Amino acid sequence: MKINPNRLNPGTWFPYKEDTKVKVRMMTDDKQRLLRAKCTVDDKLDENKYNEEMMDYCIVDWEGFIDEATGEPLRLTKELKMSCLVEEPEFNIFFLKAIDSIIKGLKVKAEEFEKNFSGS
Image (cartoon, rainbow, N blue to C red):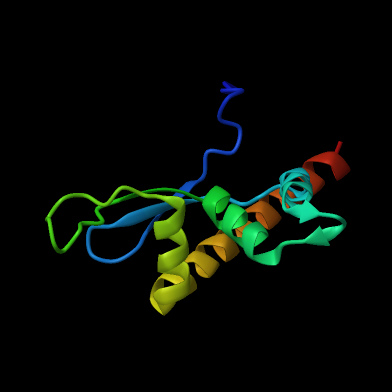
């Protein structure tokens, strides 16, 4: 099995609307702890900052999104990710379903591992 140690959690592409797609990934527990620590000051978690950092991490890339005004491809930024998630309900639902799909896939893999270990 080939592994790229710099891309251990690259994400999964999901089709969105028309000719667009979004690459989404889950956060590991360790990554969540690191982000929580980064967003905590004087033992108080800054929820807004944590949510922004989490969404920035989980939405990796996108393709096919075009700026209506210029006709140019939209560059994915942290601010644009947050705007899409907060202001565009369909995008928010899409994102949640993509994460749910990843979780379901991980559960299937965990069940396969369990069968392999219990059968040996």
